[in-house]
Amino acid sequence: METRSKVMTDIELVEYLESKFGIKAVGSTEDFNGSQGGIWLSAENGEQYQSRDIFDYYSVDHKNYDIGVLKSFEKAMDQVGWYAEWNDPGTIMLWKI
Image (tube, rainbow, N blue to C red; front, side, top):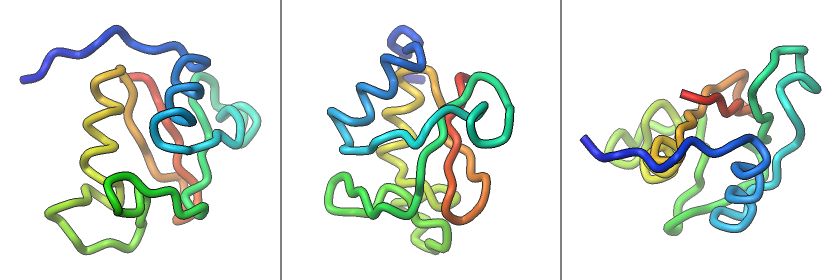
């Protein structure tokens, strides 16, 4: 099992998402539905990493996606102590592990 870097704070993660993946957070999960501690992302902006969409809710490409999230993105999130969870086909929430 790979070792995890330090767990990023939400502010650090938002900066990391923008610099590494070009993803801009919509807001916090509190802004979305009142749940505390998460980051709200749109899955409809078409951001790509390694020439693939990062989020594809309907993907059946199990080689590259795990439940519609690009595996390399999931790995990067795991390394900084976070994971992605779908809210609906256009909305992803990031939570601390």
